Amino acid sequence: MKFDYNNMLSERIGDKGISMSQLEAIAPAIKKATQAMKEKRMAWRDLPYNQAEVIKEIKEYVSQMKDQIDAFVVLGIGGSALGPLAVQQALNHPHYNELPREKRGGNPKLYVVDNIDPERLVYLLQAIDPKRCLFNVISKSGSTSETMSQFMILQSILEEKLGKELARKHIVCTTDPISGNLITIAKQEGYKTFYIPSAVGGRFSELTPVGLLPAAFCGIDIEGLLEGAAYMDALCSEDDINKNPAHMYAALHYLGMTTGKNISIMMPYVDRLKLIGDWYAQLWAESLGKKYDRKGNIVNVGQTPVRALGATDQHSQVQLYAEGPYDKIVTFIGVDEYHETITIPKSYSDMPSLGFLGGITHNDLLQTQQKATEYALTKAERMNLTITIPKVTPQTVGQLLYFFEVATAFAGELLDINAFDQPGVEEGKDATYALFGRPGYEAKKAELEAAPPKNPQFILISENHVDDRAENRRL
Ligand code: PA5
Image (cartoon, rainbow, N blue to C red; front, side, top):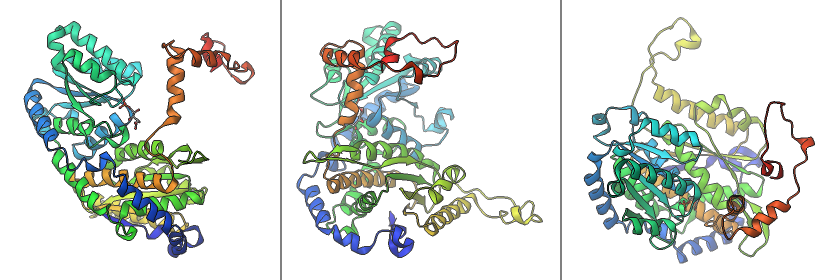
């Protein structure tokens, strides 16, 4: 990986950039954060090294099940879905599911159902035969309503179609080994189960069976992913920030945040990496968006992640990046080599505005556009940095995942917040439970009922729209 942060610095973008003296001024905080990362080296950091048995079990299970199914279907959300989606897009054919099976390496199709829009499941069930599918219920907590409700629906469909005994073979769980409803159910029902180590949180779990099992079913080299992560771990264990790209990424973003750079844009110039942007968005947002620091002070920190894709979003968002508020840091991700090459024919050589394209490749065109956008943003004094990997491979994807995980944890240290909890999402969950009358949420229900109703004056509604749900007016 090449990590180029020239365009973050005042040397390149004047006083809109970060000066060496600013970096030096936070040297004590960097030292403290580096020490903390070592002292409380967290469980997810050892995932590249301690999963030999898990890999063996995954491989055995895949070879036992693969030919019995047409599709592997993930039921999960957030950290239990974004990683599998990102890795599949990065490492398999973009039209994987549409290819005939032999062109998929004999592997099943992959579907990831990460929402409960009722249409989603109904339409999926119109496209698959549940009797020829393996459903992977992924939930670290084992209690997420979205995932568990999908599980309950699919379990009942399978049992109705196949009977309880046979249905069992079509469900595999990935969850915490000790706590939560899913592990209890898995044991009761006798479902095959893979474990997410208790100390590894949802959004840091892609390199556990959460990501490894779906990837292995789709023929992805899961050992390669872990090799890449191990390589990055070595780099990101350097004390010296000048040799540690993840720590530097975090420190630059931290300094950016102190001067109002409240938006972090991830802009790969590689379609394969588009969903890495979605995965990063959850990691960065949920980990760093916090109200309190560790001392209990109200800090309201964090950066809003934005996903973009080059060159597509040059025609959509780059105008704003170049001329809008100075509140963004853009991370470009590029590759030295794409998996394919395509050359533009030398047509229209008599038309200079098209003729120049003749004979060059889309590879060159896209890489040049990346450089040109980088240049334009730098000229407009906008903070940007560039990560370049040689090619998208299991190893480099493992590197990227691990890189952003370390960067996120290190940014959490610098901000002095807990990067591993998500108290801000609990309120919404509790309100949902209360609205459904879940036992234990009576006080929350009373709180909701006592909330002042909405003022109809501020609701514009067409005559034929029927809205008689009392709670809609209240919430
Ligand atoms: O990072 C997290 O912990 C969350 O975003 C979870 O990944 C998400 O809520 C899904 O949780 P679970 O895997 O427990 O169903």
